[in-house]
Image (cartoon, rainbow over all chains, first blue to last red; front, side, top):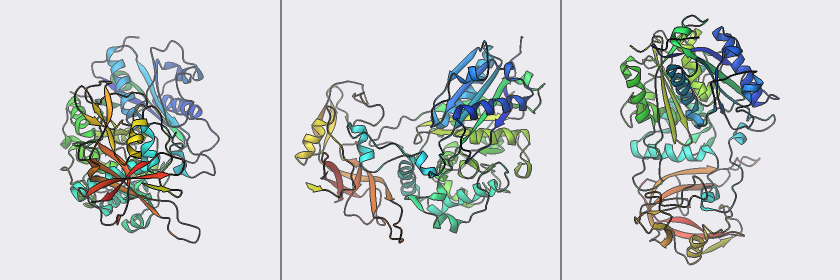
Length: 391
Length: 143
């Protein structure tokens, strides 16, 4: 088959499995399910795939063998991808590049994870194992820094000290994100919350309350990427992959470090928008990786949606909420819908770009900005999706 | 040096990499690595254990050298366990990042502080505590 790739790549299929406290299924089983759903959504057979990229979450069991589980033969692109929360954007960029280069035509990108165990608290899933007590790398654990929560607390507190950001401003992100989730039947947490609820929620790692922290979910999400020309003939409205970029700051913890103040979004955002041939003013919908409320705040600032240090005021303005001027995390994000690493913002971006958001659909949805964030602001990807190809 | 059996610090044991750091700590001195080639000062970062190099020039010629033990607060978090069954709050552990006068940042516990009155830039000075069964670890007091 010869396929023109002059108009670039597009997302033609989206597959989302049952999600949340779903027990008894393996990571690979969720991944298998997600890929099948994405192919069916696109109007393709699984055997139409000639490329597969996998991104495993915390639990082992997802990788190259998934291609065999799916019965795929003669793949032209197959790889495991790991950039933590930046992986979804990286997989889609890799798929788009392969398609534009002509080395593959139809690539599934899949994330799955099953860290929740029945009868165990969600937080237990993301605790580091007890540190091995030897080696300087165990010092942070020895002083109490286990898992992601306290590190993001250190980052958020630094932002507060530098810019005067307040816990109530972070709470405004929690409430606006939950207000979107209330409109999303896929979301796990749909009961509206107030700033008072946020302030009264348990302090997980000061200054981060429980309602500043994302969910933990079992499930899988896959997308199918193909050429824009081919996508136009398939079952769903094509979602064009217009631009992408990565930026990994490489923080060294020493004088002059911008840890907590500036993330990789400051570089990957403008680069992805430039590739997409659009500016921030053209962006209709923002889907931001929100492992914490603070992550939304710093990413919006670094994308230039507001000035540096003004993210808190932006959140308080109501602009991010349903009915606001800058619709952000329209599915409820990782805070309130489901936690599938970078596939949370990516999946909602595809739904919005297609105009399939139901009650939560944003009226104008031509350009959607999607972020991915991994580690403790260590790894960043940006993807710009659109209803039309870049000119 | 404070030796305590009820420390909020975890137990670390020495290995080849950390022996000079703990030797200095046992003498009440904080040590950092200094690069013989470019002069950069650093702590080994918790990236990939076993890659002991200068972060600036990648030289393997790094040695532990004592520093002043003076620094300023960069950021902090207050960690509490879950409350007791009767609702009694768990004691707070204040974990901070201190920027040493020589430049490197250290993850540490802050002692003698009111956690509601901390501010970035506050001066801190090192002391050492030795949890039972472990090596002495640096903690920081205001001043």
